[in-house]
Image (tube, rainbow, N blue to C red; front, side, top):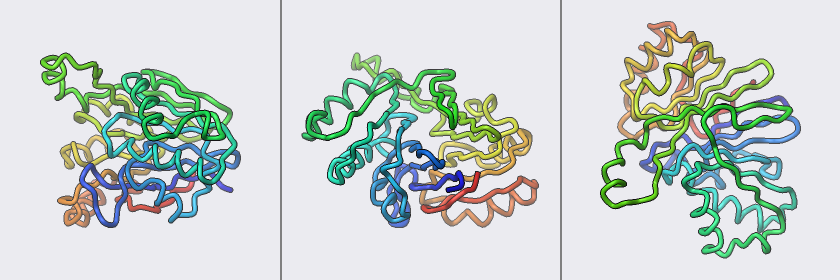
Length: 258
């Protein structure tokens, strides 16, 4: 199998009939990696004929439900199909205890599953490396607007949210996750081979200009809100006017060769 990315979910936080919530899989010959796991990911995996037994590792960028809630259904599907291989899950540190506890709440007990789940934290900087790829996390301000509520209610949330730089041997892939603004992307974009960026929380014209100046070789807009659906043609035309290379909007099932 050639290395590729398959978009499994391209919707924003607002569900859509034709789009699952945020997720994509990066497939290699030996194993696959899942990035975010929003609602509908398991169904999308089946629909697009992804070998989910090859998924070795899951990375969650932040704990909004449209990026993480599908992880529980996916684990249940792996259990029901008698998975035996271990599974690694990388989460924001703030969520670790709660996710483990919720698995028990759902009766997905480690002793019952038949395969081991190993939990790790996503940390700023280089946090993952194996023979296929290495990943660096860049903290962003997507959740910063919640600070006053967290302080007032004395909650434990740390507002952890990350953008990811994924390095294969000859490719630099950037996944924005959700961000707080363009400043979150300026350091990470330059000379990317593939950019998977959300387009809900950003000024589109300024985002296109940043992509152009960063010399990104291929750009996919994802995390698409319903109100932007009717603007896709206009935005694509503008991207072409700016001579942005390889621009397209994501759809569930979109495959990108690496």
